[in-house]
Length: 629
Image (cartoon, rainbow, N blue to C red; front, side, top):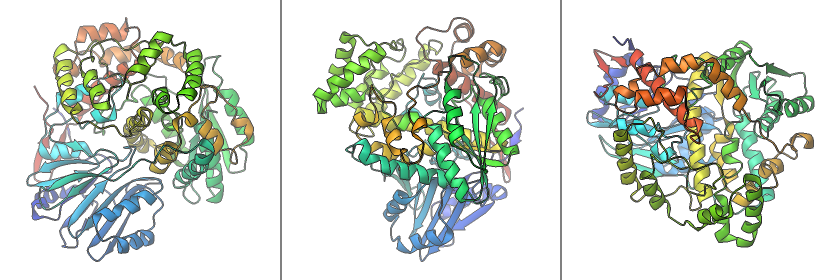
């Protein structure tokens, strides 16, 4: 029998200014660590602990007249500063200005004259979920809490979307029926009782700046994103791979910790592959990054768990599958080591690949804006990627709007993933299910995607802009869960590149100035010229980790076999066990991204974790999250 558990980790919930929310308050009473009220005196925000977490996360609250504000997460706002905002806000729409000014990554909750507004971050590292509980619509930062309160059944079609080789953000919905997510960049508005609406507050910048024009804004935004995670006299960890994502963060962290009289520990994971050149660039950066408050840690090959280690060990306490299941043991062990060294925050370069450059579909946009320049870029990209002329011309000629493109993808879910030698100029990566997904599950998902495609709008008018936001949000979902896992172990993982202001600074630059066949991450090079030595800005390569991948797969094949022995996914009718075991363990389909295996491992691991602790104990009752079948 599954064991009963309390609500895991940190959580908060926003309630409407209505008596209909009272039953929710009663059921959660013993789990509440803090509570704030509407001007009427009714409960407004409740949560598990008043500080919002540990390390660099915090919660601040302010009141003025009939306005109440609460900001929780990673930010630099003081109570006094938030009080000043409270005096200026007369309507929930005024919170737009507060959201646009905030450095860091946080939730904002407001109530003005009884109307509630709840929002997370643009990248989705901070997400907001909502559901109808009794006669009230309530919002929370955890989907599983709402599912438990409503006895919501698992939505197997939504869950099938998590098995896509690459799941776009639009399909990363809560996996329970009746629990919904507020799209990142939008806010949930709650009226009395069950009244609700979703309003988009974030508007992406026009993509019109050159890299020289946009670089100062990126430097300022990234500097602030790092600084907001550095507390006085604190020890901070930062990845130092030698690449153009983590190295700038480490240099900025060195300056921030020096100003805060703290300490910096840089971290690099050694790779056994002799062709890997991370260590050369990291060593050069370490020599340039020197100070009494800085130390460097290199985990030699074999010192940390391999890829695939402990993938069959259920990861409990998460409200959705974590795509980073393959390195989960490594994430945890690194967090433990850093925590033992005194660090509570681990800054990572994750997100740099998503927001600094653009994907090759920028060429599709560029051909329509600046055809002469596009031909130059195409020639360079074809030489680098060995695209055929015919394949390139076909990709350029395709002109479907986003809604039509998405609907067409619904009919191709079970076709092979396009070859790597073919240019992919679509709005997103192709939507493909692995061959072990059952025909029935694939058909259900196809129908759902086709329905959702009706009237679907892209995040930005350009394909490259839409893809940038989508990839940032895909990663934001993974970072949200990784932060929860690593915080439990010691040092919480943070990704400054996914902060709202950093994403905006990158999007403001023209795509052809962010990516080029001849220059590696030109926007970052320009932004860091006055912060990093030229020697660390010259790198034009990126580490490749296939040796690490295959080494771990060979050593821990038994873990994969255990995970896929009588899979719960098969009990739900989503996968064919025989096909899954054969392809995952013996004959992986050529051309299928390894991310498809990651997605299936993550989904199965999550289901097993739910089996271990899927019941929630509320005051005066025991409630479980139903499973279909």
